[in-house]
Length: 130
Image 1: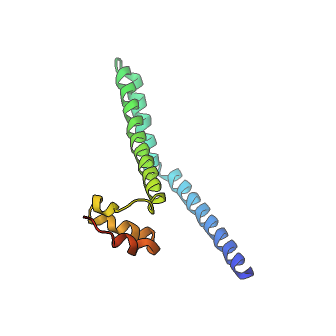
Image 2 (image 1 turned 180 degrees about the horizontal axis):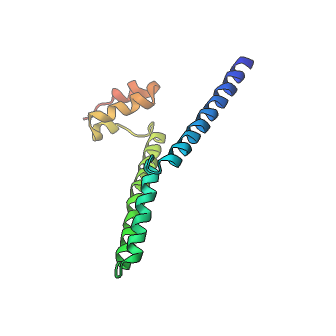
Image 3 (image 1 turned 120 degrees about the vertical axis):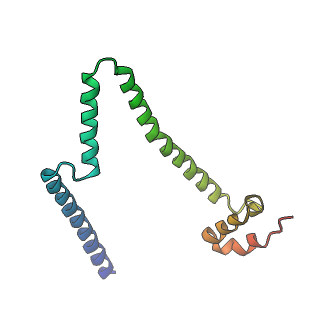
């Protein structure tokens, strides 16, 4: 047990040090070349966009619409993914109470019990779809 804890601690310290060295490397590269990372390029482009919008007359409504659209574009996939995750978790919890889901969903639904509930797979696979 002592060896396992020692290896775990060594692995943890090695991982943290590699992560720290990576961020130090990125900081040095961004200091020499501001457009080295995608995030830096995004900051540069957004700054130029804000300066352009603030200098031009009559683009206030356009700016608000673009900011609204970018917010919706970011939140819609995230909320959709959360709903899908909750649905999968709900169905995986009720797997033993569902009778013949492979009959309704087609041949691909046969893989669900095989992947997640190996001990119950033969019982589900033997069900008749008539």
